[in-house]
Image (cartoon, rainbow, N blue to C red; front, side, top):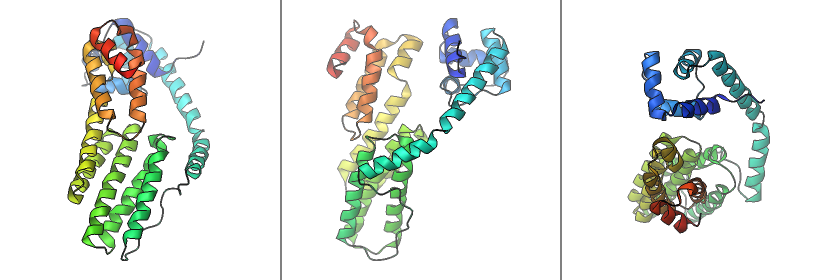
Length: 295
């Protein structure tokens, strides 16, 4: 029988006790004498963080199981994570291949020169940004974020160091706002939520300075979508508290916000969550939502 990873073990043990993540955090806090939040329990269960020997001991106590079982699960997860890292070279080759297929040069390494730029320079930057937008449909945030971030840095330096007319400066700021939204989405997709929110905030500021109110509104939509999506997913909410209608309301709000986002990823994720709520179709709010989404 294959050894469970620590995430699956912790989730299964918590489910067996009938506890929510908040309940488990409270029990673990009491036993360990250290404050634990629901988010920390979630990070352990999602294997974004592995429990140290200190926490392994107390986790075993909360479930009344042998600590050796916890330790073996941690070791199994570490082994899987090491195995995953060996695939990074292959992923890099796939990334370069996807860039080439879309006729997009790799991430910028050059620095902008302190010179006067004209309309043709802005037009070329716009074309590049439009091509990069398609990259999100092929690759995830871990691969695209360095590319999008380099574009943001390049345009920021152009604004600071090049000579340009006031009108071209406004166009550059609008372009920067769009690039920051791309970078923010990639950061969010990669799990860097605080960085994503900061990029969306910077994007709105740049858009407002450029007088591009549509871009400013789009930055708000991105930020609102992230807040809705990360508050609690529909499935997690239903599983932990049986508040199915609230889960449906959250998912409906996410669907509304996703309609204003250029990337196809939000809609795909919403469909995946909707399918997992299908067991509650008899609930009117859920049934209406699933019909609306075609799930």
